[in-house]
Image (tube, rainbow, N blue to C red):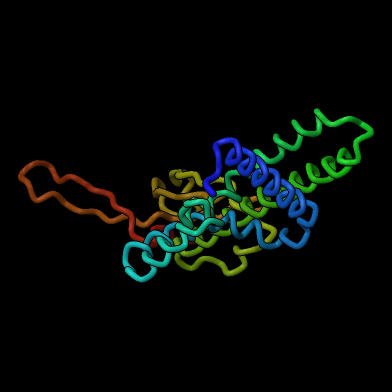
Length: 223
């Protein structure tokens, strides 16, 4: 029989409540997911790009995704839309739980579970942020090492992170010729001083020779 509008609203409310119960169950058993969640968030952009590439280049995969989207459990959402939900919704879950907690009586047995759930989510978020910061720092470190000729192997360290890069000119002549362009890579516990490699191209016009400075791929040489 065809459902009335009222019955459809009741079913939607029921499904929503069931989803929230499942979410709370997941939060209270979040310890098992602690290791999986940060990599999922950190590499989501790579996952999305790979998914888009496969979707556009593989007709069978495109048909498979389209078929999955029509399933009731997917709610007519694409795989990409489903994948972004854990990334987007985790911060809002804390606000929702806090709002629910503020409207829960002190003698309600749900109060303790709500407080525990909020603490669990905050712990996961802090862990994700720290893991993301660590991952980004490691990527930067690898890029720097690849950019420096003769870079010391011990520059890579799990206890060291990149702070900033500064382009300077040699003034003393102790490290290189005076006026040479140098780059300082400043880390949490050390400084790497490098000479920037320059390529000079003379203009072929009749005017005074112009100098064009371009950086090579390996644009720094470590001392």
